[in-house]
Every structure is written in C-alpha cells, then in structure tokens.
Image 1: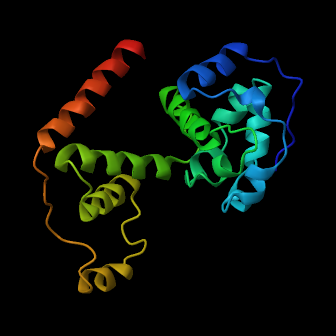
Image 2: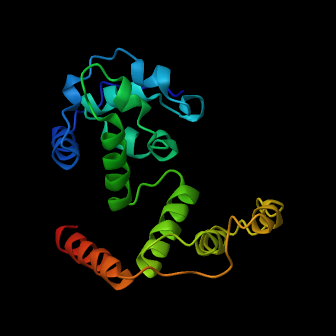
Length: 188
C-alpha cells in the first residue's frame, strides 16, 4: 500500500459530490474496519475499503479516483452489510467509479471495458448475451486468447449460447439507456 499524504488540500466539493450522488454520509464512518475485514478482495486493493473511506472523509479526490480499489470492488455488499453505522459503502464505491469515469481517471481499463461490453449487451438485447459480452470485451481489450480453454467446456454444457435472444421490450431498455446518455451529456 502506498503512503497516504493526508496533508494534501481537502476537496470539500468532492466530498459533497459523493454525498449527493450516493445519498450516503461518509462522515458517519468511524474506521472500525469491519468493511475491510469482510471484503473478499481486499488483498488485491491498493487501499483497503476503510482507507478509501478515510481518504473520502479527508477529501483526497485524486488519490481515490486513481486507485485500483474502486475498480476491483465486486460490489458484493459485504462492506455494507457489516457496517455498524449503516453506511452503504458499496454504493459509495459505485459512485466513486462513476465519478472516475466521468473525469477520465480509470485505473483499471480492462474492468471498464468489461462494464462497457456488459452495458452494450443490455442496451442491444434488453438482457445480457454472454457470448456478445465476451466477444465485445475480447475485441476491445485485445485479450483474444485469455480463458480460451473455457469456451468449449461451457458451450458443451449449454452454459453459453452462440446466438442472442432479445427480450420483448428490448427497445424500451434501449430507450432507458438513451435517456440516461442524453441526461449525462447535459450535466457532464
């Protein structure tokens, strides 16, 4: 873990932005460590969840938005469940990812590409199409052969279909995405 410089200027506007967008009050966190103790991915983070919360409380915007932790978070909500102050920590992590994307500070590009492939599938089919997500991700990331040995296994068991199936009302789902994108353009 990197040394954290809390003497950096506190970005009060960032704290308020996260509070507003997440609907959570990070100042309620008293650093008990339950979130970090329960997180199944904490060993892979550059900053444990409790440290991310402390960085947020001290307004260390640049450190947070450049961190890998917010991207490696699986949003399993263990942190939220374990929080004695009822802070929805997973929601805060989601909000931090959204802000990082908006500001072009994505520390884990492959994870962003996977999210984008997932959302593209939802927009196009109204549901996820696993093969489409996989192919979209592989094409964008350049990791063409990663996990290739799994393909025949899952396909032979009928776990992944080669063909997409759109749901009734897929056009309505696409409209939701389009409305969101238009709103984001106006406010972004």
